[in-house]
Image 1 (cartoon, each protein chain N blue to C red):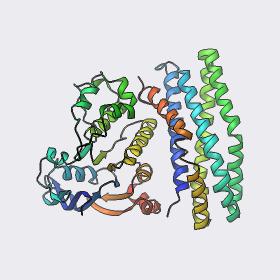
Image 2: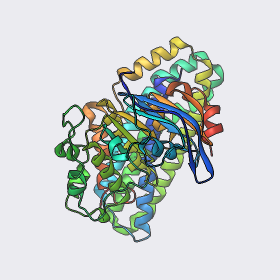
Image 3: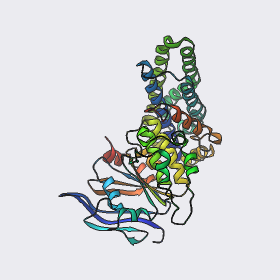
Image 4: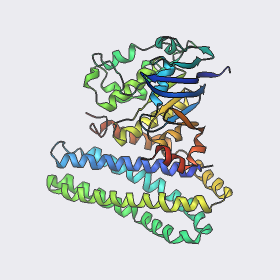
Length: 237
Length: 190
């Protein structure tokens, strides 16, 4: 497929003897949005890490734009236009906001720099107010904005957000969803892991639910939202 | 197929719930002495609650969703009338909240308890109202409205533009302003 960005084929991943992913198939095309959902410990983050080379699948393949990246180093995968906003944010706390952003600045695979420093400042005005503050001085919400801004500075074709609103107050979470919607409208493909199924399915075209390392639902967001019993069964608390 | 209008209503409910949650958290911190009152911020939050739910959100429900459901399902009439009556009281309730804030600003700490009580009453009523819509009215609508009904309702909601953003994006800008000035952990402000 010419417009396929990232694929996992029959991926099995283990942590030691624990079998976490049981033959997962996943794919995302250019411009698509996928909500990756499931309760804690079901394998969502492991699937992402397996595709990015942060965790090595024991079996199966990972393809980036059709090429085999199963054993690629993470930075090689990232250089293919894939940006990752990890759970826990992972900003560089000893660097300032400006340094955190500029260190990741690069053109996209097409050579374009649509996400410039100025555009990130425009999208996240709060970061502009904190531009010379160290990462360690930022609140959790500010760190999350910085991580998203840093990912955009790479001019990605695919943005992966893992628990982007975890631990944040409802107002900040709503603002992040608004920003992610804006990003989606620019055509950047997006994988979103989040517990707020209503928010993510309103942003994404497709949805996938994992239970104990297996896919139990893979369809459109409209389809999953039309099945509240399925949401309650697999995502309800 | 789930309707776009129900999705829009859900999203507006989430925004209102987030705003009320933020206001209550701020007032709790003020009452505990951890925060100085920021009347501009509290006023902006009330303005948001006034503009988005009271001016944009409720009229859409009344004019399209409730009107069509009333015609299709007699069992829904009582609850619709209750919700419409609550919508009609909305302006007075928001005025009471604004008056309580003005009184708090004028009288200082002595006005905090009254503002807190008025805010709690407003919040409780909104939660009750949204729960009634989501648990009683929406299921009835999903059951009784036809595909043609939904197409008309969705068209009206979509024609309304992006109500979340508001005309020319000013509601979204107001929301962003609030998030940026509300102190952490409620918002991003310092």
